[in-house]
Amino acid sequence: MAPWDKTVVARDFRAVLDTLEGGKSVPDSFECNGNTFVPEQYFNLTVTTPAGIIHDWDYNVGGMWQEFRAANARYYRNLRALGFRSPFAWLRWAAVSSVGAMHFNWER
Image (tube, rainbow, N blue to C red; front, side):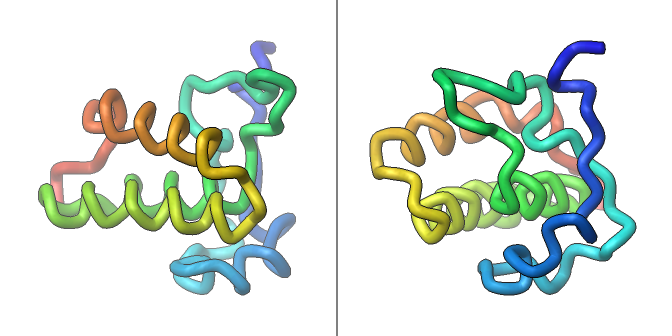
């Protein structure tokens, strides 16, 4: 199994999720794989973070361009709140902003 196939369940991160912007809206039963198609370890940084779970939830809920941009902006703010330094948070934000559209739920 590839490291990015690992399923993460929101309830396992509940204590931290509830402290982040948008975390309380993620149901305990929500399953994701951190950040889709990004390996678990990338430059020795764990990718599966509560910020990634919230971001995957936002993408699952979907919407229009406004929601897409809001999800990516929230992801950056939550990474910063978790202590990620600005360059690393910015790189992750840039990645989801540039290639994330294909994984966003535009069906809403």
